[in-house]
Length: 108
DNA sequence: GCTCTGACGTCTA
DNA sequence: ATAGACGCCAGAG
Image (tube, rainbow, N blue to C red; front, side):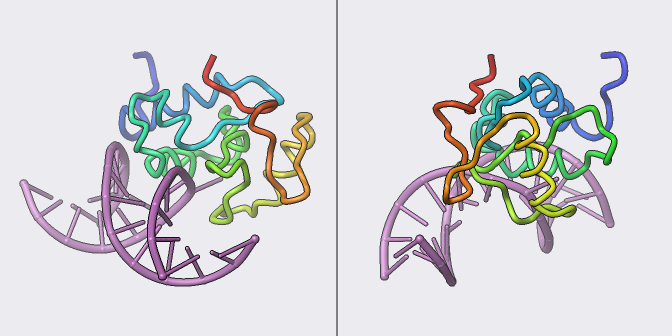
């Protein structure tokens, strides 16, 4: 490709998929991994997003865990992600979870 | 080429 | 509902 070689081909693919995620929607790590061709590589997806810089064109905040909630291993704090999602129109329930039926992105 | 780690996922206690 | 353990995959040393 032109210039998508940062680390591994997988990381690049993950970035592309997440970049395709429409605004106001969210996708799970396993979902991105599945779209990448490896439904079991959810951990690898997290590693890819972790490698992204602050001003990256990839909306990493639209990626959440299978519970529809934000992971707590974030380096900048999960509060940042929650705020970004709320700004995009994503609603959280009483348990801090997202309605997968409404905001769930299937990789269209 | 082996080993360790890690923005995960799912099960069982 | 909460906590702990096992499994899976890719990147870095």
